[in-house]
Figure 1 (cartoon, rainbow, N blue to C red):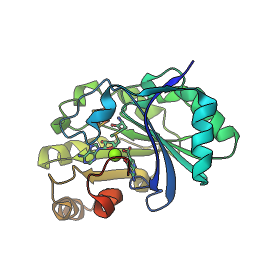
Figure 2 (figure 1 turned 135 degrees about the vertical axis):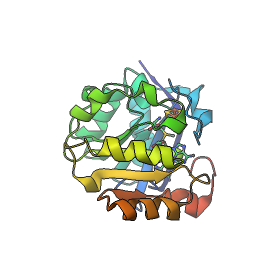
Figure 3 (figure 1 turned 60 degrees about the vertical axis):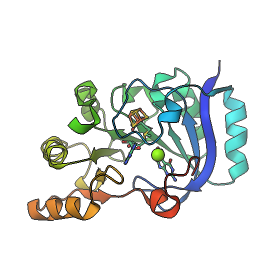
Figure 4 (figure 1 turned 45 degrees about the horizontal axis):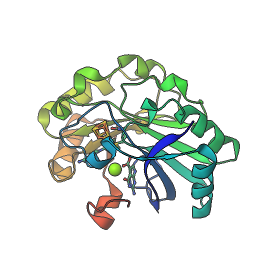
Amino acid sequence: MSLHVSELFFSIQGESLDAGLACAFVRLAGCNLCCAYCDTAYARQGGTPMEIPEILDRVARFGCSLVEITGGEPLLQKETPLLIQRLLSVGYRVLLETNGTQNIGLVDKSCIRIVDVKCPSSGESEKNDARNLDRLAAHDQVKFVISDRTDYLFAKKTAGRITAVAPGHILFSTVHGVLDPAQLAHWMLADGLPVRLHLQLHKILWGEARGK
Ligand SMILES: C[S@@+](CC[C@H](N)C(=O)[O-])C[C@H]1O[C@@H](n2cnc3c(N)ncnc32)[C@H](O)[C@@H]1O
Ligand SMILES: Nc1nc2[nH]cc(C(=O)O)c2c(=O)[nH]1
Ligand code: SF4
Ligand SMILES: [Mg+2]
């Protein structure tokens, strides 16, 4: 059995609470959503089949202890939980970025799951599986990617119902180049929201370059 891999690369982690750290990325191919703003549409199809030992070998060559599994939607592939388990078993800190439509409970609890809750402007918010919010562990993170005021109000309401993670693990991000981060900051401050403002550090560093 193999996994369909879109790309493997080494970069500065640009998202999540680990932003700023050197990180190995495994971008898996295939996605069940088509978010209006998706910055990795190329990973929604295609990919190269790779066996787990080959992926572990490629990741090891980057020489860092932090690995992120992203996509595309990583949880669409049956072998993803096994890949994560193998990475954890050899000592990596493992992050999983997932779109919130698949059961995050299938993944080892030691993995840090970063669960997107899709906002209305993505065009995919009706596909969110609300049950994932009850499956969160304290170390997990929940992310809202926001384009406009309607998205912000949706995120604020949904975040208010999350009790499984501390407010500092709830990330409010802008859709890059669409919503001014200062506008989002103003809204958050005006409402006194305790959640975390989140910007994509890699795009500040390298723009929209692929494999970065
Ligand atoms: C490309 S997705 C892959 C993982 C998974 N499919 C998901 O949506 O969470 C990784 C993260 O990038 C975010 N993202 C995609 N396009 C973006 C954009 N144009 N601006 C800001 N964040 C974006 C997604 O919302 C998600 O949090
Ligand atoms: N540098 C960098 N950090 C990232 N964090 C999450 C990413 C993703 O596309 O899931 C990403 C990415 O594509 N690049
Ligand atoms: S779920 Fe993630 S990879 Fe899929 S279209 Fe949306 S942002 Fe892109
Ligand atoms: Mg990205």
